Image (cartoon, rainbow, N blue to C red; front, top):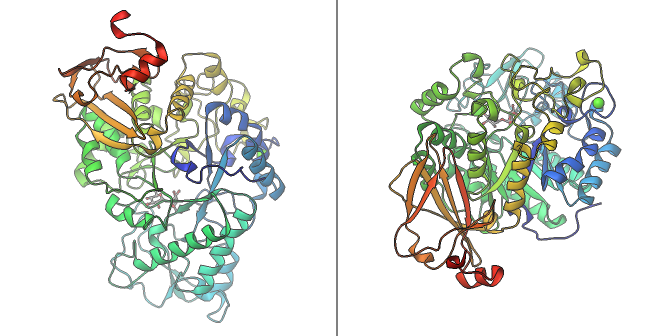
Length: 561
Ligand SMILES: OC[C@H]1O[C@H](O[C@H]2O[C@H](CO)[C@@H](O)[C@H](O)[C@H]2O)[C@H](O)[C@@H](O)[C@@H]1O
Ligand SMILES: [Ca+2]
């Protein structure tokens, strides 16, 4: 069952939720989450207000990179269930009006993929040129090494092939050779295979690295854009309402071309904004956030940024200067165990000292700046992490549903779980879990649900223009969003102390701001600066309804209250 035809630009208003099937809910008691389990939890996601799920790779894999090392693009890892289970999941999601997109790992395969296994055996193998081989490791030397904490080179010698092969990520992830038309065609067929089953689109992994050219950085090449445009054209020709989301961890001016002229990706993550939100909070200064928008070019109509605070990887600092990285490590990861590659492998709540006010503040910003927000599973309840697990596994532990055995994630023997649960005294599942927070009306979970519901009542959040205000108090981040006659004003206090702010709102003279969480009407805007005070890390979401329509709705004058 596919989603009933609706607005083709649905993704501009959507709230996304990222999850790993194996970490969400175990439907068959083997300690590993699966599609049948996820289907049982769709009611929860619907209740929360999620519009679209993003599933991390669920394909067969030796799991040396948590599924990003795919050994077969056209099936499902047996531990996650069958193709039938997958289809049922899609049907159940669509029945609830939710969409589902999945990771598509275009750049590389696992070295266990049949293509690579046959390629390495002989230069004459039909798939030999599915990969990038060389007699020397001195080609493409300008290309940076991305996983610098584990890899020494982008080339690895294969004794069986008697040649070096090219890889931008782990050495067990050989890059596909996109100069080979057979590879380009094969990956188009992979996409069609999943779209034919009803999938609503793809989060396309590591797209900047598809092609290599000598003398370049081997990133963002024109050949890469040409192929991505071809993918988009072919999808648009055959499918309706499907989306492509680009994972291009690049500076905004380099991400901008991934939108093309509205003919490449529908969406792209805004990577460099994310660390600046954390910097702005820690320094109690809006500067880094505003500055990032000065570097963010406009995007074509119909395109959308994806905004996030955390995801399944480390909090990447790739798009930061050395000084900014040092600051982030000092502020958020003094313990070296918290660092991975160029980044910080921690979840949102521990990064923010489990301070509910800070968690709400950063969510409030991400849900109101231009773009569609993504929640990383478990962050809606403030789940913790385990910095002692290897790689990025510390932020990939089982979802915490209840205070019972295995956090209600699985009925398996606890030793069978794919990763241990978070069990420390602050973030352990006995205290942080969905069941407890659903029962507590003032929990983080209920607050997140309310915020999502408010956002969804106002198209201006997904589609409106952005205009920063410039109050003299630098600790205050204030902006206007405008769309189709609707205006909202967002005011955030980045400081841990109460702050006053005076805002120049004269153009809205006569309007009475309505605070959207409590629906309280504030004094009307006049000629003088509009004075507000905000508590530590406080936020206001105001609607600025035209005076007459507001009076019509409530039948009251401010002076009468
Ligand atoms: O498939 C390899 C990796 O691809 C994605 O990587 C991205 O995350 C990296 C940080 O872990 C980042 O440095 C890089 O720029 C990105 O492409 C995927 O999200 C990873 O999980 C995966 O290992
Ligand atoms: Ca299972």
